[in-house]
Image (tube, rainbow, N blue to C red):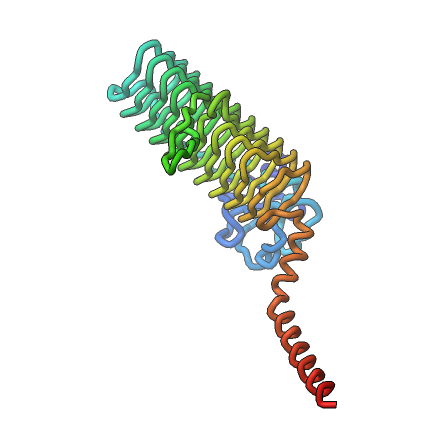
Length: 345
């Protein structure tokens, strides 16, 4: 596809700075771009690459100045570039259609219009699958579960009994929804399983990465709020309630009965203990361990996690420990020398 810079700016609501007649034929990252490509700059650390890139134009945010080549100025360069990618190189994914002969459907299964159930799927009794939803090969849907409209359930996903999946939900391969919560009573060295009889509810517009485990509640339900995005290899324990539009990054773990407000971010490898609440808009930095509830709009870091400014000061002190140790040893030596002089007198 060929578009002039002026045409692209009109489609993404941006302002052209420079030659608006430049023809764009492709999209690429700032390092990989070639002549004819348009790229974007959303992070200041890539500013040195602006004069090195071979891109014919750059999408930038705010007041970033790029004098070396034409650009489109927008409010959000990343979002604008995503729109351009869809425009210039639309994804043409071939999706299954209809119900494959090898799929096994139980009794009273309801299947919506234009829904696809691929090879070797198992859909148990009483399941309802909404319009335009796709189940890729090897999926298991437990009895009495409900899956909404326009969902993509990729290969080898397991959704256990009585789970509820909203509309426009994407679940990537290998994920398990509704596995038993980790509950045991230990008596005389033996661990006795506690029945997990609750469910899981995934609300609209959620995306869940590959190999994620979301446990069913002991009672009631585990909830993933509308618009939340979960990365690969995340563990969500039983009775957890996650608010709307949260971001949970790879290898994070949320212990049982903990709740997250809206717009919370858990960075990679964050761990939360059970029965606490993370306030709206909070950010937990990577590899932090949170042991107490946090108020809204808090940035936490470390183990145990502390407000970010305090954690940075503590880390600075820790880095100075070798020098402090050396200083203390020198003072001890001087003190011992003075003590000998005093005793000699």
